[in-house]
Amino acid sequence: MVVWIALTFAFLAPLAFLWFLRKFDLYSTGRYFINIVTLVCGLIAYQFAAQINPAIVNAGWATWDQVIRVYAPLGEEILKSLILIYLVQRADFNYVVDGALYGFGAGIGFAIIENYEYVTGDPGIALSIAVARVFSTNLVHATASGLIGTALAYRRGDPSWRGWAVAGGGYVVSISLHMAFNTMVSAGAFLVIAIIFGLTGMTLIWFVIKRGMHTQKQWVGEKLGVEDRVTKAETKAVTSIDKIIDDLLKPFEDRFGNEKVPAVKELLSKQAEIGIKRKLLDATPSPTKRKEVKEIVLRLGREMELLRSQIGMYPMMFVRTVYLEQDVKVWDAINARVAEASTGQKGGGLWDRVTDRVKQSASQDDKS
Image 1 (cartoon, rainbow, N blue to C red):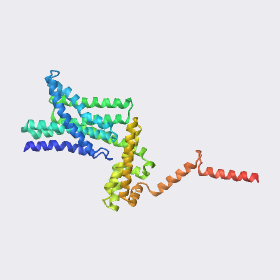
Image 2: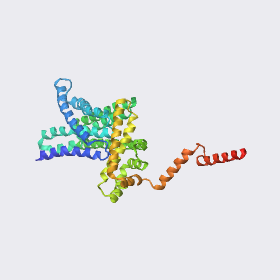
Image 3: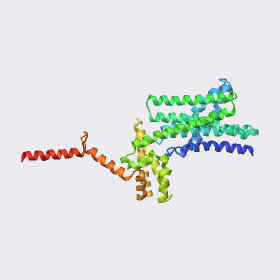
Image 4: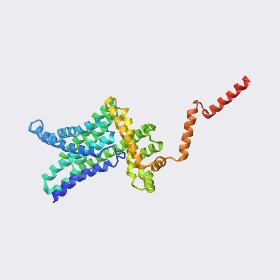
């Protein structure tokens, strides 16, 4: 019974960490299905590592201690990252938030199957092993993969030499982190130190996701516009989505009920993804990839139109106006008209038109 409890904990707790981090993906760009794929690929990566690591020792290339400290971290991080390399090239991939979540998922998948081996290997202290590994080794595996996913995602947004340098640096940092942890544990470090090491790694991934969300908000504010039939109010709602429950959806639910709330959430998420995709087009030199991204933008636009129809005209008016007061919108329109009519000089615009009319009247008087 204790072994089964330990196995259940060793399976569910790592998934809970992933679920917790997904809560910070406010635009929901990281797909649940793809995260499941990364989990499965992490399991497969472990199966390969479990064959490669002993083979290195059996071939006489290294001792088991050297494998643990050096070769295992190197090989395992490369194996876990193969699915990330593929995903980053896809047109439906977005930015570092996706990279961090998918990388974290691959590491969690690897850790879960590894937990099974360790927990069943010593049934007498199965629960202790499960708890210790979940809060230390599991988080290190997930953090290391998450960092690689983040670095690869950054390179997707910056195809210059700087992006490649960041991608390479991500591998170096990830593998070094893994090596340092394995060396520390092999040297007999206290369990509490290992747990602090693991929790620090998860905090680092959380910070990466928060920073990634900040960048994505800037992209959304920059790229969403009239061509997507997204108003200024909707853009403001999307870029302030972390406050959306209190500032928008709560009063919306009070007025229209909760039936339309999921549709509004989905609409804002799709608007955000369009903004992110338009920004990524700037960093996508491949004509084929650009075409794929544009097709995704068009599909998202069609899905938005369907959601607008489901929400209804009056509720959509509420969504569009709740963030901007009517007087602000009126003054924005006036300022735009003045700017359009201006010569660019101080005191221009409407006053320029008055001056032109006066000159025209004066010239007519001279002729008469």
